[in-house]
Image 1 (spheres, rainbow, N blue to C red):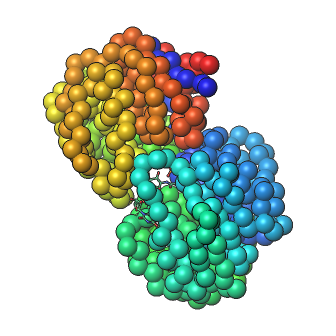
Image 2: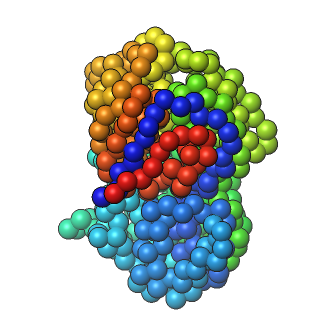
Image 3: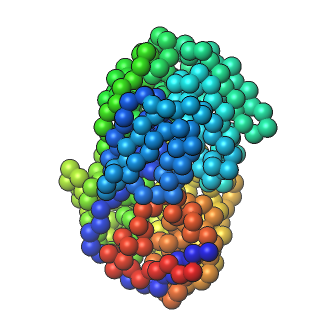
Length: 417
Ligand SMILES: CC(=O)N[C@H]1[C@@H](OP(=O)(O)OP(=O)(O)OC[C@H]2O[C@@H](n3ccc(=O)[nH]c3=O)[C@H](O)[C@@H]2O)O[C@H](CO)[C@@H](O)[C@@H]1O
Ligand SMILES: C=C(OP(=O)(O)O)C(=O)O
């Protein structure tokens, strides 16, 4: 099994391009199931999660073509097998996103309960509740969600909590429902807006995406379209944290500061100078950052997907900071591995107190989930000596050409067997 070997202690500097967003590409590929016509997607990142999603929809009878750099063409004209089997979805949470589109397009769906990062229980009750409100018959049997509806009907849905994929599933299903659907307490993440823009290009009628109240007027059919996936704000934030932790100086292109305000504010608070242009972000770090308190919450607040990376940054910063995780109940698994490298972290419930140390030392560590892996990479880049990270398949789910990009910034990092 592949591992990552990092020889740490180098400042990162230089320029890299940010890839398309995993969490936008995955729902947007599912939107391709809603039409019989051809869909063309650009800036799709080459990630294991994207490959899994493409395999999943291909076995449903959908034509999938990779035509060029980051371009994927889908043809769901012959979609005839509305099934998502367990062995294809067990590694990926986003597989539940086929449920709404399959039900709306085929009138039925059989979708295995999803896997993904083991960061909490992650039920899908809100997805089911919303589809039931739209008139679907839904039951869960032997690990599968079985859903049926001759045609979904518009409804007013208030989700119990803010859910990103829940909002996306319901927005896609409602696009082909009869009448108006209102989603209250909707997630406001930029990826929801990107999905809504794709659906609008397909002829959907959606207002309010990016606010907590989305109104969808169902249409009889959607048509083909071309859509460019937005930049990955979490990938952007990860490289900025890596640069900050190493006292570096970097320019990220093909990205935008617009989706990252909460993260950039924290980096400024830690002492970094941040600059931004229409499609770029620059960061110049002090020799040693200051530790910063972080509390995760739904967008536009600080994202849970950046929590682990800030734990790594705080581990080598000056002072003590508190990190509070409010979204997932089991998202501190990286702490034990960071401690192996010499970090000083104390966990109490959903709060981690991190006291920065002047130096980390390389060690063997194990990646436990996607962003936990990213935090270990950041810590390994700072640590003196060699860090060997095991189970890096997690990283391949969500970071395109990670080693190549870090080497471009001057890191010594390689994949070893
Ligand atoms: C593919 C994708 O876009 N993944 C992102 C998405 O995950 P995902 O969409 O799975 O996360 P949610 O926003 O749904 O989860 C938020 C919270 O709500 C709970 N919940 C959610 C749905 C439900 O039916 N019942 C329920 O209890 C979850 O367990 C969690 O505690 O948003 C998360 C929160 O920003 C990010 O960390 C993930 O990277
Ligand atoms: C938690 C994440 O992914 P997923 O929802 O796909 O497990 C993530 O992207 O950090």
